[in-house]
Length: 402
Ligand SMILES: *Cc1c(COP(=O)(O)O)cnc(C)c1O
Image 1 (cartoon, protein in one colour):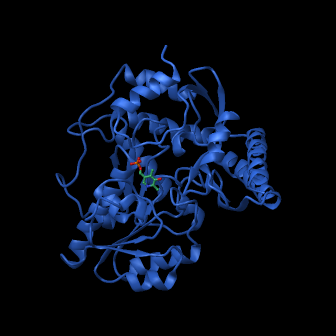
Image 2 (image 1 turned 180 degrees about the vertical axis):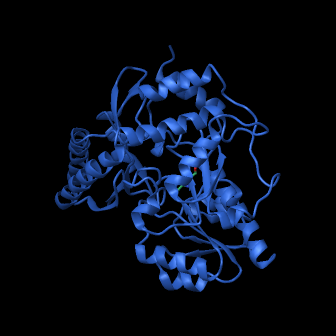
Image 3 (image 1 turned 90 degrees about the horizontal axis):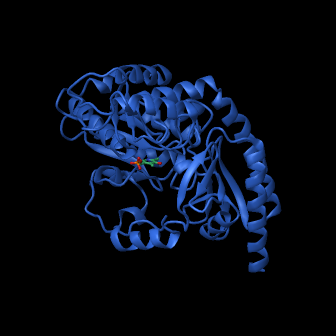
């Protein structure tokens, strides 16, 4: 078997150097735990950046994958299969929206959403109705369209020119939003809770203003719930936690329990803007991914996991707030449910590195934020373990800084 050094060296030689990986080779998982190739155990607060919401190797997911893999993994979208329609129906019923399109990733769900909004915009207001409004500090993905909506210089730099028809507004700046939206706007695109941008929530007042501006100017309100959606806020869709319904919602990360799948779901008045041949994908919405997504949604429902997210999420918040009240290096807590962040005064990456040594996977985002995106199966005793380790690491930092 290859050692950590051999595996890392091979990647150094042969991979495009786009990742700054943590020094661990993960080999297997079970529930909220992972093991590396040397057999060391880790408690997982990252869940593959929000993908493994059912933890690892959930028996029902394993069984469904085995069964479906032996029957049919892929068929072209030229044909019907048994699972795409039922999954679309389920997502429409859960969201109250009308029609779904399935992609392979979150980024593609965003691309599809803005293509649909452009078609609907052109139909409603001609060629000029093409402009997009997005938020400073947001993250929507890495392709040119999604990157054009991403309001973070570090991701955009070096790739210009991007789409030019995007106006950026500060999150929760109601006046700025009003000023940015016009009759030439075809869509307002936002994450109800910034994920990569550091776990900052949109205010309900701001979201209501987005809804009103979109209605007034016949633009699509698009929510990117790729990270915050599908249960993390304690409701199936994050927008249900905020009480503001978008025209189009993009989802991905946890939906097929690790099998690549994304989707956008649109209201009928926008969905009718597209016709056969105008959008498509080879892999998106295949039988394996769609069947597993149906299984994911059933498990969340039958195991009452949203109740757990609400209960243990509140517990996590309470414990993080306690930590903030006691540790100088930790200065604030943001988010809700199983999408939370603790704001540090010091870089978060070293904390994450040291967490690894302690057997806990944390994640840092936005330089100084430790982000929590745990599996929906996380229990209070796991929170206690994570907090104990974090307390120790922050205590050390404080002593070292003093
Ligand atoms: C991860 C993410 C994306 C991109 O999804 P991919 O599956 O990586 O393409 C887009 N928006 C948000 C909010 C995300 O968290």
